[in-house]
Image (cartoon, rainbow, N blue to C red; front, side):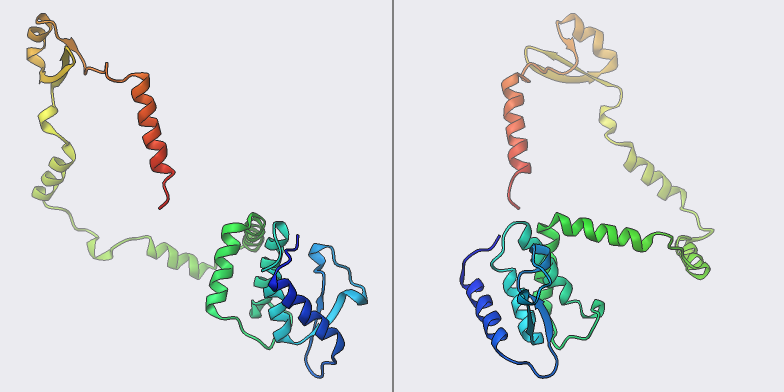
Length: 228
């Protein structure tokens, strides 16, 4: 759960100094072993910290925890930096750079956090209804371009669009035939003549062997597993 590194040493040093000093003025109570990691509410597990110390301690906790404990500490640190959701005003502010990093890491690495956010959003939206004014605005926004109401495309434009959507007109009414591994496309009226010459109907697919399929599969897998 805990990693013995320099961040843990810094954390322990701040805690030990805080135990020995008296804080006058504003302070915050901190669980030395966080409750979510099994800590209790007894006096020997609680220490008084300044706002700055409390901020640093929670930031350090993200640096020497691992596994599920890391995700819990990451979420706790992120939650305490959201001043507008806090129960009281803290005396520090988080920088945009740290905030961005916390959000990205939490969303990427913590499935528990994702489920928690989804549940919060679901509860917030439950029973939610738009006002009549909002519904009217939404309805008007779906009408589209009012400047185009009553207007029609010209016949020339319609014909151009039809031609574009027709596809390859050269292949219309033609058939594929094959012989000795060679595939041709011929007109439908010439089909009988080629069949008498030994051609078969359809494209030649003898090249599609199990080995060919395996190679194509490996190429496709390599493409989708590539690092962007």
